[in-house]
Structures are given as C-alpha cells and as structure tokens.
Image 1: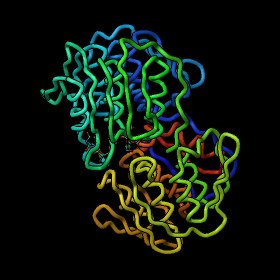
Image 2 (image 1 turned 60 degrees about the vertical axis):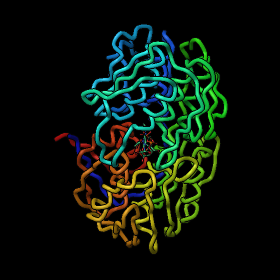
Image 3 (image 1 turned 30 degrees about the vertical axis):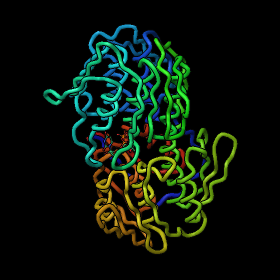
Length: 422
Ligand code: EPZ
C-alpha cells in the first residue's frame, strides 16, 4: 500500500528511455504457449502485470526465467494444467488471452471470467463468439469459461466487431487460435493497435502465416505447428505519451529515447494542436512547451484514433488550458474515476454522460488523492508535478502495474517524488 508524496510545481529536463510495451508483452507471452519449447522475449518491462502473467503461465506448466536486461525466457515444453485460475485472472484481465492459445495447443482450456474493473464493464463475449466460430464448444461453469475443440479448430471468415468497434485482446485470442486451425481464417474488424501488429509479427516469426497485419482484415492460413522464437517487443507508446504529457504539463523540454512516433500520430497531433512541439530525433523525439496551453476536443477511438489509455493524462493537461475543452470517452464510457480526484486538486471538470467538460484553470493545488486504476493514477502523478504544494497519491500499486518505478525515472529529470510504504 505505497503512497507517493509529490512536490510541485517542478520543471523537468533531460532524457528518458521508453521501456518495452506492457500491452504487447502480455499477449506475446501467452503466444509462447502455441510453440512447445523455449522462447526468449526481449524488452519485457518489470511490471506487476508482467509478473502476474508469469505466474499464470507457470501455473499452466511453463518454466520462466528472467535474464540480463529486460530478457524473459518462457519454456512451454510442458503444459499439463490448461487452467487459468480466478485468483490470478481477476488481478490481471489480460490473463484472458491464454484462452485461444491453450485451446489451439491442448484442444481444451478452462479460464476464469475476468470479473469487474474500475474502468467499466469489460465483457469477453466477442472473444467467445470468435472462438466458437473457429469450432470450439464453449460453456460457462462456476465463473469459468470451459472451451473444447477435441478435433482441433477449423478456419472461418469471422466478423469480430463489437459495440465499441474492434476489441484488442479479443483479436489477440482469435488470431492466436487461428494460427493452428485447419484452413484459412479471415478476421474482419480486427484491432489495428501496434501491439496486435507486434503479436502478429512475432507469430509469423514462429512460423505462422498471417497477412494484412496492421489492417482491420487479418488473413491467417493455419499451419500444423509453430516454433519457439526470439523476439523483441515494441516500445510502449502509452508510456511514451505519458512522458510527453509530463513535459507539456510542466512546461518543460524532454528528450524521449526509444519511442516510435509512427505509433502515436493521434497523440502527437493533439499535443501540437495545443501548442506543444514534438520534434522527431533518431529513435525518439524532443517534446517542448513554452507557450500557454490551448484547448482541444478529444474523442477516444480504437487505433489509429486517440487512445483511451491516454485520456486521463490528457485531461490533467487540459485542466490547465486557457478555455474549455471537451473529452469524449468512446471506448470505456465510464472511464472517469480520475475526474473527482483532479477536481480535488482545484481542476474544474464536469461529467456529462460519456463526456467531460474541462474548464481550464490558472493552476492546480496539491491535495491527498486516490488512484483507482492504472492510467488514472498516472494522471494524478502528472497533475502533482504541476500542482502547488505536496500532492499525496495513495494506492500507488495501480501505477506499478504499467510504469516501472516511475519515481526513479521522473526524479532524475527534476521531479520530487518520494515513495512511502504504509
Ligand atoms: C486493451 O484491453 C488494453 N489492455 C487496454 O489497456 C486498453 O484500454 C483497451 O485495449 C482499449 O485500447 C491490454 O492490451 C492488456 P477491448 P481490452 O477489448 O482488449 C468492449 C491499460 O491501461 N468489448 O479492446 O480488454 C469493451 O468493453 C489497459 O493498459 C466487448 O463489448 O479492450 C470495450 O468497451 C486498460 N466485448 C471495447 O470493447 C468483448 O468481448 C474495447 O475493449 C471485448 C470487448
């Protein structure tokens, strides 16, 4: 139950290296189930979600070893217990993406339904629909998804769109299962997120036959077997976006190394739109804000639209803009737990259904605030960097799920954050 004490306002300077992507690492770790043997993944960040995923794979029978730097080896030679326990899956929803690989590898899987989440209702009906289309028999029992395909899976044309557009982990589950299915599968309305493209590239390196990567139509020719792989995951675009907003909210200049601007066009567009400069440089960029923050309207959308995982952080920034902005959350309509906490810091935010009216204020004032989920907690830390006084953020464990020791990366840049264990 750590808490952060954050002194503000501060100005930041220097450079920060962006870590490997959490949301690419998680499905790629699950993909190693498909190929019996030892796979080695690089740039896998040290995050609590990664450790929880590791526990889940160990429980199935995999052997995991952490190597030098951010290397992670997963030996999936033995999968003798194809069960994803509630105790683990409830802590990390992405655990659901072992369902497809287990079904394809073992012909049977039992995975706990993920349960509730602070950012809203997160059903897995589309995952189940897609796997049923591949021929799996699926029923629910005592909170578990029981999936069976004793004679293997069969390729099919599948429309995977849902009420909010594509599903990221739903695409991951069906894509992974289809790699070992008999015949061809077409996934229409597939998620186009860079993390899904990274998963597909990794699967192709394991011997899969996937085309249309990065587009909403994925074509998968099933193969008999896949091979273990050595693969480096892409940089984390959400972490990069969070550091860009750290530079903007503190009117600083920061150099980001190891970030791919191509994966972040919507974010960079909005930042430039409000007066922040983002200059590409080698394998990264320099982010600077010198003028006042202009207003902007943001609507979150599936990739390549504005990512919902940067909505809270951008709201903290627009809280200091000169005028009113509107933020519409189209992916998780209830993803606004941070609104009340930012208002405790003297922001002026008003919720109207899936939208928030952000009336810009001259300054934020420090206060004790409570983190509720991963990205909301990042927004509170960013607000604390700009606020006058000492902000106390509790339930920091939320931020450790997606940011590796964030205080040890911000303090060398000029932040004053202390972590206190209570
Ligand atoms: C992934 O979650 C990310 N998680 C989330 O990041 C991210 O917010 C989300 O995609 C959207 O970009 C990981 O990659 C581990 P979805 P996922 O299925 O796949 C609805 C973070 O902060 N839906 O694309 O679970 C769903 O309710 C996390 O790192 C159904 O209705 O999200 C939502 O409204 C938080 N039925 C929408 O689709 C389904 O079966 C998009 O969800 C599946 C989804």
